Length: 153
Image (tube, rainbow, N blue to C red; front, side):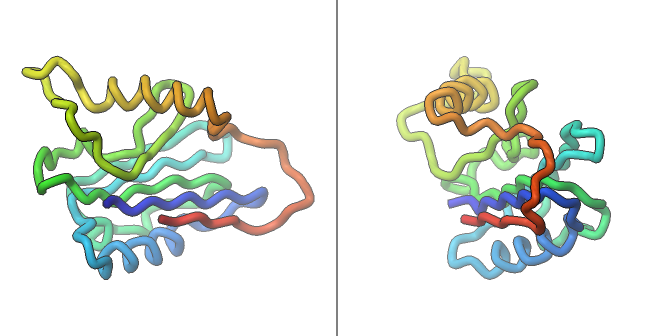
């Protein structure tokens, strides 16, 4: 399974230290999580910034990232060590929602020959899931809460 991370805070936090911890966990996982990685974070203006790399997260320069109030990261563990291309690394973005998921989709064939591209399928399914469960990441106004809240899988 892939490794997921979300960090959200009302005040800006440094991205690098969270990714360093994330990389350490991914590198030391019982299941290999080095088939690439990616992250999305909001810049000070609230616009999403994206980074994806085919190399393992623990081999990356994690100090290159600045500060944010919202970070989403994904370290990939490719199903059956197949389809290891940067385009399959998350997070994905449909123009409104940033999303990541963990697991495998059995019985579906992806690729141009099969007529189903992973990003298109996931964009549709994530939008439906998000609409059903109300799980859209949106920039929120500041409140009295301070410090980051971290969630990792």
